[in-house]
Image (cartoon, rainbow, N blue to C red; front, side, top):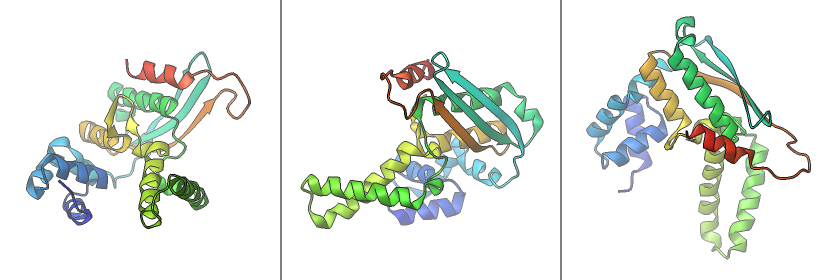
Length: 216
């Protein structure tokens, strides 16, 4: 079933849940608005949206080192209280996100952080690729837009599929954790280093090693 953008927007306005979560709920319920609302409530996503406006100024800075010191991540995730910051469940969640970053190599936190010139450059490359594939001019723009969306999902942390459960985005995982813990949670910032990155060197698949570790 095709889910219209208008239907997704309506569900978002009614529940406050994220666009991707609303679309998924409508797909799961064959476009039934009331069932989709129940779906979001059952998953705790509608409730999570209400908590998302609350101030989160506590939390943790987590470091994660993998592959014998070949990959490192430094990550800040905020919550509302020091009590939750010291909770094992929250600490495990922060650790999981740090491991995900090590494995999935996000460049940005959100799509809004991607510089416009980067997107324009990507569009130029994608347009040239589509034309080289012999695609008709009148559908190239749609193809480029689709590939730009794919770029966001591959490079923006909140839109990436969680390595432990690829069917769920990191944004969805965060919202589910908000529902479980009962406080607003915010991934504030991260940095990822890979030894020798940008230098000419023998190729070692450190990322694959991390992925295997994360999925255990």
